[in-house]
Amino acid sequence: MSFPKTRPRRGSIVRPAEGAEVDINPPGFNWWRAEGAAGYRFFLEGETGEEVHRSPWLSDPVYVPDRAFPAGVYRWRVEGPRSGGPNAGHVGADGLSAFAERS
Image (tube, rainbow, N blue to C red; front, side, top):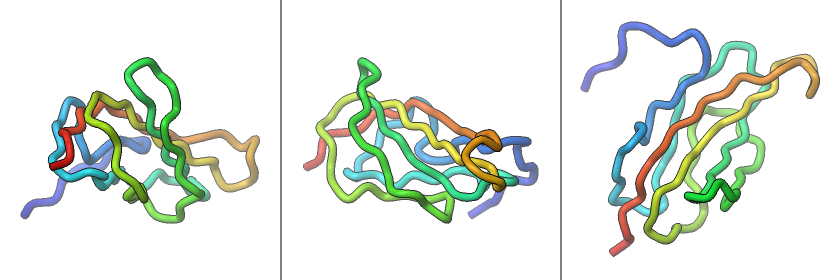
């Protein structure tokens, strides 16, 4: 196992990486902790951009949805309002992942 030596400036996708195919459904998602974020909300969108899943507010940069999804290509993103209230700005991360069909 190895850990990255440098950390990106803002929150960014870690897993699944852009273009990845995953064999576990639902997959687990994780991203870099964003400096200044008061929490996170995870969004999953289908191929046409429609929202298919939204998480509750999360305190940690990791999430496993509570249900499986049909095989297909999905885009996922994370938003995190900065400490100081909803108008204090957001940190974000996004990626594109292909989900393998559940067996």
